[in-house]
Amino acid sequence: MEALDLLLSRSSNAKLIEPAPGGEVLENILKAALRAPDHANLSPFSFIVCQGEGLQRLADIYHDAAIKSEMDEATVEKTKTMTFRAPMIIVAIAKTQVHKKVPEIEQVATTACAVQNMQMAAQAQGFNGMWRTGSFAYDPHVKQAFDLNDNDHIVGYLYLGTPASDTVIKKQKLPENFVKHWD
Image 1 (cartoon, rainbow, N blue to C red):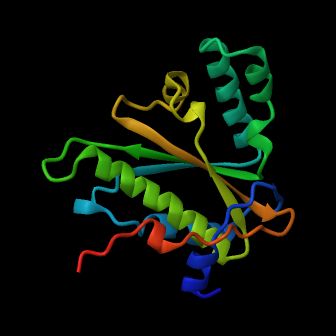
Image 2 (image 1 turned 90 degrees about the horizontal axis):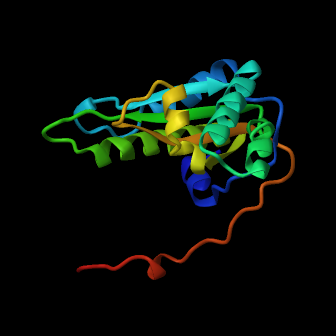
């Protein structure tokens, strides 16, 4: 797939089945993440690839967090299955640091760019994904389970796998609705 075609037609697919990316394909996805724009080359990102038993481990973290955060019973029950909506989830973490030239927001943006790169690399190789956040990306109990510091942020959960159905391409937004030109 040509790069520009990919960028102009990208759409997420939430219905993902086995197989998940593996081997060289997964290596390409992770290498693409590491090519994200990165002011001062701080590499403020960290990734956890969950599959197989790792998906159950992530479900257990969500379940424990839901109970500790006193979430409603329906949410507590949902935590038992929500990580199994795809055969792989990559947890993207921004591990920010104090830097005189690179504020925290830029370091979070770098990690977000890394997630975008991973999703695009997956799609370019025949897979698809869904970038999710939700309350568990911000839950202090989840952050504690990942041994994160106060200045660390879960930027997202990238669900990856093989599309179970054709990906519906979203209608193209018109640039003139979002762009001003200062000539």
